Length: 181
Image (cartoon, rainbow, N blue to C red):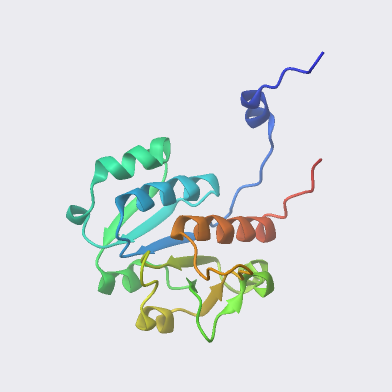
């Protein structure tokens, strides 16, 4: 007879490490409220506690954001700020990392998030607009730029998928997840 599977027991018994200083996420002028909601949910999954949405709150449909974020909407600290305000909002010692494919970006497989924590208390990940990515002046204001290597014929992915990949890699490196069966 098959063993009964209870995922609620799994999650309640799972021992996961926590961030001392969780990464900060910046969503740069996203076009779709649905992506903001999905991003909040992913951020909550990976322990991010603060997300900045670059743009004015009135430009987004909060009910769409809430619907996709589900309970994460109330668990993640959300701030709507204008583009020129973000640089003052971030902590001074925060390493700013642009996630975008550029001629200067480093492949995610070669980037060492765990080494950041030796020199900086925290880091911030910038994710760009769904169509145009991050503007060059945003990338140049960041301390580093990383990209996700792709082997298929399409050289872009949904911004929330990209955030999932990058946040997973940062958690894996910084929180030293143990290997489990």
